[in-house]
Image (cartoon, rainbow, N blue to C red; front, side, top):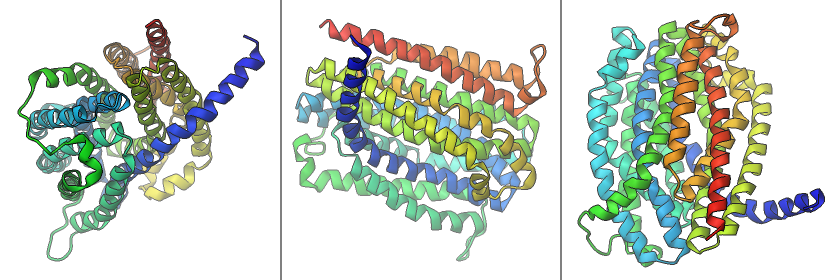
Length: 462
C-alpha cells in the first residue's frame, strides 16, 4: 500500500476513533483526577504539617495502593465482561455479572483488611524510625475500615464504564473531592475539639468519603429508571461460583498485573526510605506528580478498552483492532507533549507542594526521569488495556513480572545501591530506581504492543 494511502487511512481512523475514545475518556479522566487529587491534597497538606508525617504517608500510601490496586484490579474484569455484553445487547446478564462481582468484592475485602491490619513485614523493608512506623500503622488501620466500601465502589465504577456511563461516576468523585478538602484540614490539623492527627488524618477523611460514595451511588442504581434495563438490584442472587470463577480467570491476571506495576513503584519508596527521610520526601513529591500525569493515558486506555470490548461483543473485530492502533498513536503523542510541558514547568510544580529546601533539591534531581518516561508509560498502559478488551491478561502479566520486577525494581536496586561495576554517581540513590523503572516500562511497552499485534491477527482469522 503506498505510503500516502497509509497516512490517509490512518488520519481517517484517528478522526473516527479518537472522538469516541475522548467522549468516554474525558469524564473518566476528570473522575480519576478528582480521586488522585486526594493523594495530592494529602501530600501537600501533610508536607506542611511535618516531614516525618510526609515520610510516613509515603510509606503507608505505597503499601495501601499496592493492596488496593491488586484487589480492585480483579474487579475491573467486570469492565471488559460488561462491555462485551453491552455490545451484544445482553443487558440483564450485565446485572447478574454486577451482583456476582459484588460478592467477589466482599471476599476480597477480607483479604485487604487482613493485610492492612498486619503490615509489619512490609514496613520492615523501609527500616524507618519507630515514630514514622507508628504513624504509618495508624494510617493503614484506619483505611482498613473503608476497605469494603472501596471494593464495592470499584465494582460500581467498572459497571458504569462498561455501559458507557462514566459521567455519573465523575460527578460523585468531584463531590467527594469537595468534601475531602475540609475533612482533610479538620483531621490533619485539628479543630472543633478534635486533636491534630497529622498524616493519619488523611485516612479518616478518605474513609468517610468512600462510604458516602457507596451509599449514595447504590441508592441511585436502585431507584433511578435509567438502570432498569440492567436489573442490578431487582433480584437477589446467591454467589454463582461458575460466574465468579469466570471473573477471576480474567480479573486475577489483571489484578496481579496491577500489583506488579504498583509494587514495583511502592517498593521503590520502601527501599528509598533507607536513604533518609529527606530523600523519601523528595521521591514522594515527584512520585505523586507522576501519578497525576499517569491519569491521562490511563483514562484514555480505560475508554479504549471499553470501546474495543463493545466492538468485539458486536462481532466487529476489524473496528476493534483499528480503535486499538488509533489509541496507541493518539495517547503516545499526548504523553510526549506532557513530558515536554512538565520539564519546563518543574519549578512551578514544585512550588505547589512547598516542600522543605532539602526535599526540593532531591525532587528536582528526579524531574528528568518523570519527563522522559511519559511516552513509554503511555504505550505500555494503552497496549495493556487494549489486550484486556480482548480478554487477554495472562501473558501481559508475565511481561510485567519480567520487566517491572526483574528489570525495573531489581535493576534499579543494583544501580541505586551501587551493586554494579562503574555505576555513575548520577544513577545512584533514588535516581537509580527511577532509571530502572523507565527502562522497564520501555521493555513492557514493546512486549505488549507485539502481543496486541498477534492477538488482533488471531481474531481477524475468525
